[in-house]
Image: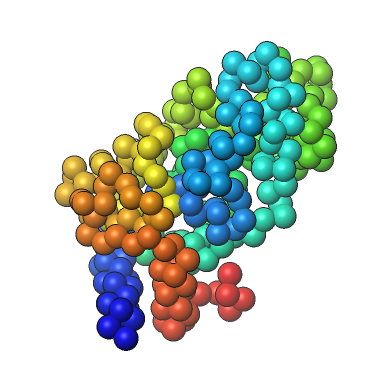
Length: 262
């Protein structure tokens, strides 16, 4: 009973922090998407523990042999339409609709924030929403590429036959300049940043919450493993699902969720 009371106090405090914030933003990592059935990278059952998976997003490997990426990514990336947003995605979208969240800065490349209805999504590691031709530079939407990529085959440009590459940032590439600049602006302006499901180990994106703290803002950390910002956080929890179930219940009680619950 005492533990339940402490948890309710924590949820109430989080709600007060969000509703009192002038400029709240969320920073999300792979731990959010595990609740939608998508495997993370560095967890105990993460993708990088499988043979060859470290080659999936290696830019040198891609340009030598793009079939490696498409073989490894056919389910992880091109089966995404079968995945549904989890409670975290839904709550963040609802917070934005109700004027309580300015933006979602995400390290994820699974498009689930978009699918949940978030409008201001800053994808600092790029996105598979579009692919570009490595020869002529033409852009092709995800829906046109996915049927071929889902088979593990290498999709090619309909105009020149060049290999198509997703607009995901591979290791060895720079982060998308415009998106990262926008993320820096949002993090620097925030008086509250919700760090959700991120180990805060992949730089330079992992340094974004530091901008909020340096400018006098507050950080909330919800992650199932320790992070380097835990000591600086005004609130820390290790269970995303439980925390966001409570926030979703609060939003519903305040009539701030859509009628269909999404």
